[in-house]
Structure formats: structure tokens, C-alpha cells
Amino acid sequence: MDAQHSARGVEEAEDTVNELRAALLVAGITLPSLGLDPGSLARETPCPLVELGRCSVETARRLAEALR
Image 1 (cartoon, helix red, strand yellow):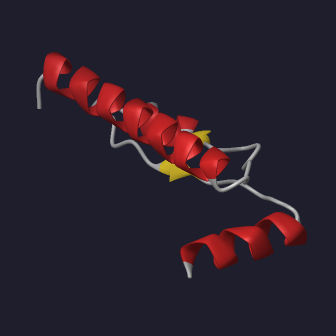
Image 2: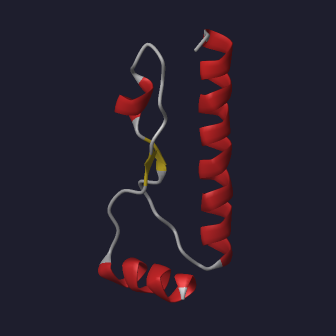
């Protein structure tokens, strides 16, 4: 995988995180740690993973309700 393709993959992952953040906000949910996992980007060929992070029990409950 070339550097340009890797950069596009990271940009696509960032866009996806932003879309998820926006969709969660519409549902009244904020995941404070939502972002890309830095370790997954630290490779020669990045393989971005989305870090959802930790949240309160109340936020987890609201997220479960939104997904139903």
C-alpha cells in the first residue's frame, strides 16, 4: 500500500469518526474519548481503528436505547 493510499485511509477513518460523532450528538450522546486509536496509526502502513473509549453507565444506557 503506498503512502497516498494510506493517507486516504486515515482521512476516510477521520471522516467516519466525525460522522459517528455527529450522529451520536443528534441522539444526545457524547463519547468523550471517541477518536482514532493512535497505536493503529503508528504503523508503516496505518490500519485505523476507531476508539470508542470509556463512558458513564448513563451514556452507555442512552447509547443502547438509541440503537434499539
